[in-house]
Length: 187
Image (cartoon, rainbow, N blue to C red):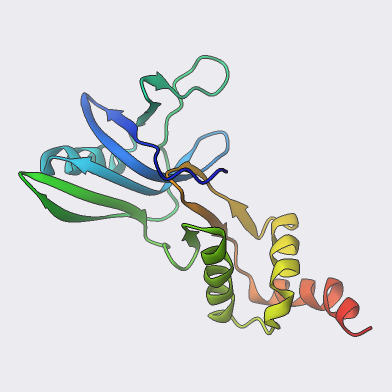
């Protein structure tokens, strides 16, 4: 994922459209929204949220070009979530709102950052909240190990954000660290 904070995309669903400056989703056979930043009237923002709750797809277009899955199909972000979505809105004046749509596990099972420097801090904070003993200098190795073992899953998106879905299992992660990282640090 590239960090481009100047991207503005159009979100459309059910005849409603809003602008979005940032979004993160889990890729796969279907893409699942984890974080979405919207701008529009209060009715537009709430309508997009309601359509997502109803498991309707949303179309994400990049400057008029609809993102496709490579076969000409419209790339939808919807379906089953595994956890609930939340909406938080903020007034912008002149009848406009900024809305943030995020999953219930945001900050626990889903972590995000806005810069490479913040990524290390956020990952350290997330690991510190777990029952996983580690040394801060092991963080790059732990991150690579957890990515390789699919305990961290990269999120895709736009707007300068990056993120992971975290598959936490403290006992298994401790075993992985003990088997693969600890022996190298003891030499």
